[in-house]
Length: 376
Length: 228
Image (tube, rainbow over all chains, first blue to last red):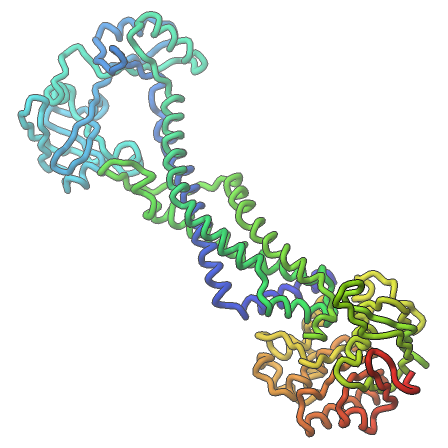
């Protein structure tokens, strides 16, 4: 009986929505667009953060930089020996890396030395972004200028796979002697030091010991790096949301106007329903279903489109703003991930207010005396 | 036997304000079960107001209304709606069909909140449309119906919950002579089925029809002569 009543009223609600097809379709479209935009930003930032933490999972627990008057300085080799004396520390390595500006394409590359890559002098591996920017393929010659203006031709041995493109897009990997030639870094000096700590709980203690032994250093933990990534992506996500605020506000005004202002036709219709025997609660039930059908359809379509947009087209609309500021935009497929908490937040911020905005004005109309129809 | 008794009924609009208006003034009338009663009178005589009071659409300012032996005046809105839905069928002057939906859906509307089976309801509505010769127009939108078709749809709607009392307010106001006579034939059929019919009208075609059992004349919110 109860189910039949709901079914009958939903049937009427749907044919009722069909009558104002143009108006309701426009509303659903705008509603869907807003949910789509907000959900896209949400999915994208969340997926990027997960991607970053996945990529950084194998990063060293501690990076030690040398500072001089607040500026980054090269680390002398003897510092490595000092760090190695600290209990619980293993795999202490000096790293060489630096930024290189390429005036040809106006992009910044990150050049690093990797022993694992085992490059012979003259060979390099480049990230996909670098290869795209220079339209370079494997075995091509890639010319770089050294710090003193000389040019060195390198041969591309490999192009990095795109699954780690978020952090490797702008990368060039070369041998140690090549690096020192390009940047003019003297032998016995490194950009910074990386190390592993056997007991993860000891990271903080090790960091403070390093500072006391080498007062001009600054240890950076992996957790700090992850936190920085998180806040950078949150900030970028927030920036897009701010840009979208105008669209959201416009939607709120349209929805409020549509939902709260009953036309004289709608008021008359409510009067007829009451006159033919509908109770106030039946009218409100109908309006509840009306609001629910519109907002739920828009919400689900918006979420679905956002999912396709973010995880199948790699967020083609927002990528330039959200992925990076550089010329070398990373191109990669994000791993699909939905956060139920965020979905619930979006649901309660869109579906619930709209449904309430639909019911409240109908309440006023539904409490009229049914005999008003006799006089119209 | 009286199915409806209105005792010392008054209805005052905007009571206590400068635009106070007495639509029905201390009227008592009893409606016989199974008979056709016409409330006759000029515009503003209080016919429509009395109809809406008799049909539980509005509450009187003073007086009592009895449906059978049940007192209606003090019932809360919910119970009043239940009685109205089950016992009364309304045919309005403007027909008041909902625009944009089909004739069939219009007929089914009063039964939706009762929660019966949708298919059964649909069959019942089609039977009624068939009874009034407009089954072929069942899927036409209400605004595409002619005046006569719209009225017959409105009559079918009034009968969907199988009420004992049918109330019609100026049912021939928008109909030509032929359609008005057809309407009175339908009233005759309703009467033959044992239904009580109350009509408000100032159309001679209605109050002079042979099917009418009783005419109650009204003027200025009161009943004239020995109508009561």
